[in-house]
Length: 64
Image (cartoon, rainbow, N blue to C red; front, side, top):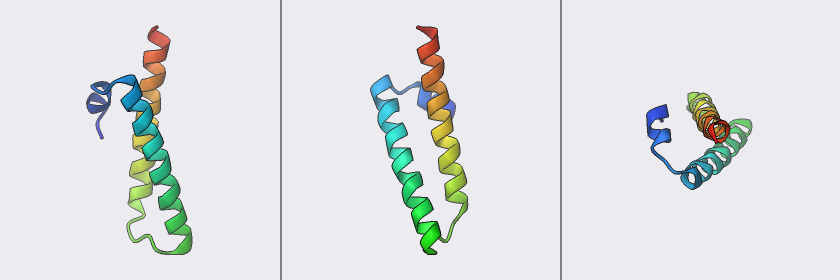
């Protein structure tokens, strides 16, 4: 997910996206620990997307 796509979302949608990404990251880590995750790169991508969403949310909060 690109930063420009995230900026187009509303604040509620950003919060929901952050929650969804957090849940997905938890599930990916769990599956990796159990040995069922084949594509470990997905963890890295999800962590970066979550960081992007949180960073943009913080930027918006500081502008107010």
